[in-house]
Every structure is written in C-alpha cells, then in structure tokens.
Length: 430
Image (cartoon, rainbow, N blue to C red):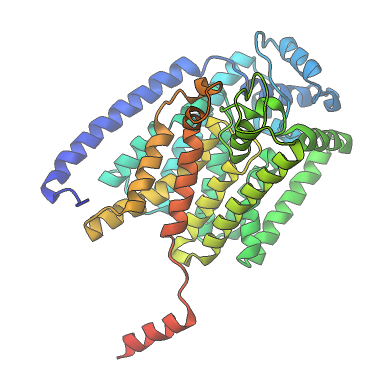
C-alpha cells in the first residue's frame, strides 16, 4: 500500500484536527454523563478505603455479604461488588474516602482523565512523536476513541492511574533513571498485582540494579502495608485468591477477555455462564491448560523482548505490560487501557516505516486492524449464550491484544550476532 502523496499532507492535517476536535468533544460529553454515576468497581475501591479509614476489621472484607452491607452503610445502594482485590488497593482511593461517594466519584473521574492525558503526553515524548504532526494527531484521536478508557472512567477503575505509573516507568527506562523506572513498578505490583512480568524481565535482561530497586520498593511498600493490614488479612486474601480468582463459574463469561476466560468458556459447562462449551473437562485439566497457554504467551514475549535491540527496549517493555493483561486470571474491557503504550509505540513505528519505505507491510496492516478491534464499541457481551462457532466472535479484545503482541514479536529486530557486528565493522572500514 503506497503512502499518501505529499501534496495531500496539509489537507490530511486539517481533517485530523477536525477529527481530534470531534473526538475530544465526544469524550468530554461521555465523561460528563458517566462520571457522576456511582458504579461497581469504584464502589469496591471506595469501600476498601473507608474500611481502612474507619478502622474496621479488614479480615471481614472478603466476606461478600459483609462487604456489600458496608456498601449500603456508606450510602451506596442498588450496587453489589466482589471484594477480590488485594487490600492495598485501598491506598488508591484513601485521599478521597472522606468525601461522599458521589463527590468522590466525580473527583476520581477528573483525576482519571488527567492521568490518561499525562500518560499520552509522556508517551508521545518517549516515542518522539510531535502532537501537532499528523502521526501525533492520529495517536491522540486513537486514545480519545479507546473504548477501554471509556469503560475505566465510567466504572471509576484505577487503570488510568496504573497507566500513568507504567508510563513514568517507561520514561525512566528511556532516560536510564533507575529509581524512576523501579518505583512505579513496585507501586503497581502492590496496588493491583500488575508489573510482575516487567519485573521478571529486569532479571532476565540482567538489569540487576533495576531489579534490586524494584524489589526494595516492593519490600518497603509491603512493610508499610503491614502497619495497616495484619498478616491475617493477607493470609485471607491469598487464600481467597488462590481458590477462586479466575476459577469461579462466572469467570467463564465472555466479559473476561483473557486466555483463561476464553478457555473456561469453551472447555467448562455451566448453565448460566457457559451453556454451550465445546467440551466439559475437569477443573484440574482446565487449570493446567490455562497455565500452559499463559506461560507460552509470557515465554514468547519475554523471548522476543530479550532478543530486541536497545532501541526496541521501550516497545519490549510495553509489550510485556500488555501481555500481563491477557495472562491475568480476569481482565475486563477496562484492563486494556494498559495496551495504550504498545499501541502508541508500535503505531508510530509502523507509520514511520510506511512513510520511509513507501508501503505498508502485512504485519503493519494486521496491527492497524487490531487497533480498530480495540476501539470499536462492540456488543460482544451479549454473545455469552451463543453456540460455537458464533461464540468465537465474542472475544474481540482478546484477539486484538494477541495480534498486537504477535506483530510486536515478529517486527522486533533481533540483536546482531558477533559475526554480523564484525561484518559491519569490515564494511565500515573498507
């Protein structure tokens, strides 16, 4: 596919500016409608924070009946939620927990928009993209149409905050600032459990100082958490997570766009959540299959990331973060906010290659189609009761995420071998 003629550049830029204004207007309109509504998700974080501030016995939190009774006590009615997050998730909302739920939701929604805006600003700088050039305008439009971001803001989730933390870490990696890289990863792991795969990558890359600083940050934050949550709280959380997280019958619903959710829907029967599976295998076999498939994905990304050049290390980091979403036990639409760093970095590289080489290759085209699957407001959740093969259509975010990660792996340049380096030196000296 040839690039656009240069004479069309100014016209395209005007179109992009108009599209950016329209996308911004739609984003603001949607936010104004959705932010004031107290929803599940936000209710969980708010209640966690209130329980801590009020000095309640947090060991009772993981009892759904007790937890939902506290929601009603805090004035959150008509909403139930599942207390399946680590207790440290309370830290995210504690500065706002003294406010009424409705007011806290509005403030948190505004903060979430700021987190996302700052993330995009830093990501454009990290990948050397000007916000006033065509590529930068297109990428800002992409984020403004990113459907998972709408879901995260509507439900008061903390993923815009996690996006900012990982963006700051990515910025630290680019600038070789070890502390700036490590601290956000430590905070993300403690808040939500995200960041473990990038943490492992530090060790595989033998970035021992970075690995050590991240480990130190985790240790410090764990020590701080123990001053708030007793060891019994952590024991109860890990017991609950180990027995039920990603293993409940409801986790087979197509809302969960992960490898685990996909396999559970196709390989386990439940009259409500997965009524038409291909097979109904044992729970042990299902868990083993899910673990194996997730390990294969993680191994693929870690392998490609370890082979990447220093120039591609930022994309490798972004791909590892994205893989963390697909390999999670549970991940709904709003989790895919964490794909934005990979989307921006890869898109910028693909468009640059298109402009310089004069054509868009197949891998680049596949990546752009995957982006389209990510931003479209598809009603896939209504296909939960669909029979095979129609039910396969119900996993657009999973397919999009897998495609983006695979294209990253196929496009990443391997590190030159010793022989290649010697050949290059010989050519340079001749």
